[in-house]
Image 1 (cartoon, rainbow, N blue to C red):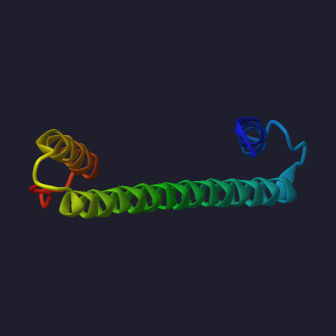
Image 2: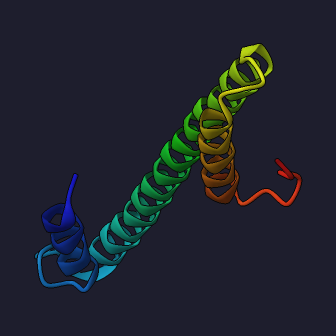
Length: 105
């Protein structure tokens, strides 16, 4: 349901799309107004749910990357310092993405 539906509902609420007179018309407008409010609430709740799901997914993926980097770093021989620097750079990037002050690598 997009903007055109909401526009149609809004025009009905304003009395331009109903064609009813008297109490029945007023009740219809009130019902339509309540329905439009419910629709907007449901859409807002769905946006928040999707946002939370995306946020959780990104954080899980970044956490997994961090664990893999830790494991890789522990298993590398001491000599490849360039690889270790690269791992530190990736960790910093991950921490900046998370916005976490707890990242101190």
